[in-house]
Image (tube, rainbow, N blue to C red):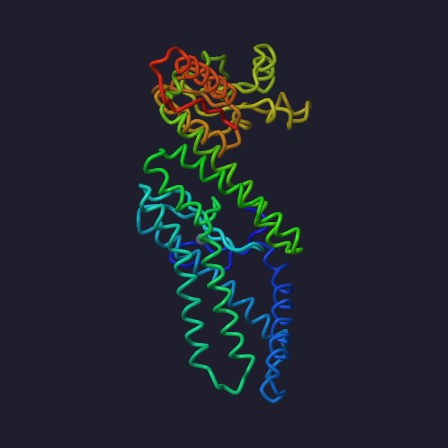
Amino acid sequence: MRGNIQVLTLKGIPIRVHFSFLLILPLLAWSFGQSFQLAARAADVPPERLSGHPLVWGLGVAVALFLSVLLHELAHSVYALRKGGEVSDIRLMMIGGVSNITRMPDGARHEALMALAGPVTSLLLGALALFVHHLLEGTRSFNLSFAVFYLGSLNIFLGFFNLLPAFPMDGGRILRAVLSGWLGRVRATRVAGWVGQGFALLFGLFGIITGNFILLFIAFFVFMGAAAESRQVLLQSKLADVPVRELMGPRTATVEVEASLRELTEVLYGERLRAVPVVEAGRVVGLVTVEALRQVPVEKLAGLAVRELSEPVPVLTPDSTAWQALQEMGQRQMLQLPVTEDGVLVGMLSQEDILRGLELRELKESRRQGQGPWNLGGRGHESPT
Ligand SMILES: [Zn+2]
């Protein structure tokens, strides 16, 4: 991921800091520093009780706040790991932290508890800080006492703010998990997504009125995140039980791994293909694309073999699901993949094939649902928007 620097590893999870974090830190330090001055003035604190520069205190609170956010994210991630999920990293950025959970623990209950772990951690941290503030009552340093109070309040705010049902924020994930019980995962995600987008609009409006640009950023990410995740879950539900066999196109021409690029050019343009499977002893070992060929200067075409341009491909069989295929294509940024059986080419599958299959399936579903009066309260037509 671009713009992220790995700073440490906790419990096997890489902790990365996004460069936007470095932009916001001085800004927060300045803004918190202002609060220190305002509070001291409001409480009419005598100068001998004001130790240290307000900016330094502000910076201290800003750093402590980000450590609190890190603990919040660690709570999500550690819960996920303990319940069989997978976490690729935790990222700290301008608008807060993100745990990159690449595999959710199974079951709505674990998903809800995983989402709850973060806000609960924030609320506990907040309560702890407020308790320490209480113990510090009567201390000589007003700034120390105020710093602890400030940090406690920020954590309490963080805990409650994240509990708002604004999917994909924590509260929205809890809402989705609760709704999945009777709506199913797809419809629950859609409903939670709508609620999330509603909240995003409110955040945005409030951000504009108050001139709070952090809230505007949050509004933007919540809005986009809700739409993206709804789409993802919908697509997954539609493609998870469709075998590649149903969607793939017929097998195409192939090129031998030792063939020259001139031969490759003839096959690609002669057969009007965007990509050709590369074979060695009858088995598929890779794929060459028009894009890769275009990178080679004309005068070098004769001297190079197909082997040099061949990219390795994942094993896709007719029994793989369309969802697996789409994920492989996305991860490798490939528009099509060869389908093999025992290593032998049996067909080709492109992203277009998958989308066309999806459209046909939807058409069939909507026809079936519109057939007669016996189909009452059906699941309705779902379009991939
Ligand atoms: Zn969280």
